[in-house]
Image (cartoon, rainbow over all chains, first blue to last red; front, side, top):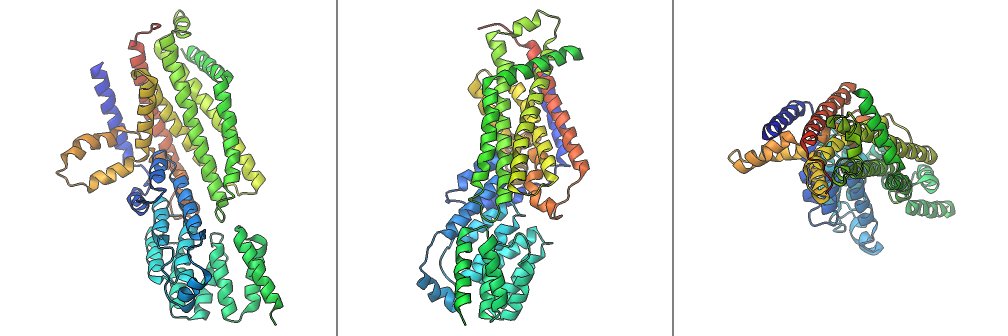
Length: 232
Length: 266
């Protein structure tokens, strides 16, 4: 009995040892980063349990929901925001935007929507260029062939220098991608307005009012369209 | 010999399909997959991905619940209670044939269950207007193979454990460890080479535990779909080979232990 058990254990180990050389890489090096980023956060234990159950992607999706809820919960008044971001200064709102997005990248390095969303919010809404650049560079290390990350880096550089024509050029490249978040489309429309290109802004708001998946953006776009129509 | 195994397999499938609990699990799985549609309303901007992941997760979890319950019932409870198993062995049936038949029956049951759940999922995908991708088929195939390994593991643990609690705890622990085998290897590699505790206690485990990264195409979905991560049919063939060898070794060893077990009603 003991001999049989020993033979069985040794055979299993040999089989596994041989096969392990061919096992596809499952990005295990990313997991400690994801767990570290969610340390102390509500979803930390949930991530661990879901990864243990083999549901790493679901853990990532839940983390994305956490990010959406976090960024969708109003932390600042309109006036606070204008005091900071409206004047081109970096805001101190939503301090967990970066760690929450890094947690998502750790769980699924190819969840491009999340990276574009997090970096877009940091750079274009909160004016925290350094954090956005850091996030995009981290994402580029894992997914170097995805050109919209590089484009976003360029767009951030131009936003920083207030070079709106170049910024528009780069955001227009990201706009048609299916994974482009509505938030970035809204940002592009607003930049069009600043640059005086009302027709282009109107077409984006029109799309948003009809087809944006988020109800808040649909309402926001309808409001913008009304303002544009009433304006001379 | 094969006829006897086939008869046991058919009987197991019929028993389990007629079992109300199994039917309830199928029904519940369908409801939960449907519930995935409601949950997707929260995931604005990535609904399709969220639905796909939720539904695949539910299929995996209900498949797991189905096989854990059924494996214990056919291996342990029948033997303990002596209800049906004694009737089998009055006929010229070897114990390993009994176990192999039970395994084949439950594998088929799992296939039927997953087909039902997959059908519900595909129906909802079509209804919602989400896109179909060939990675669905690959993910389902890998999920089935993974659950076959878990089924073989459940057979072994049902044979050697002494209570249902220890059976469930040990199976779930090995199931969870199998998903972090690569992480364990990575952490051991990063440890100081003088850390003998890791080397003696953990390293052998990483060789012994099943490596579920073979079945993780669904986890690399976006990368594969975008062409950033490679995928080959050869890799799928290797996964199949791994399943056959690993699950086969577990079933053979379970059969050996089962042949030596004392069967008497308690």
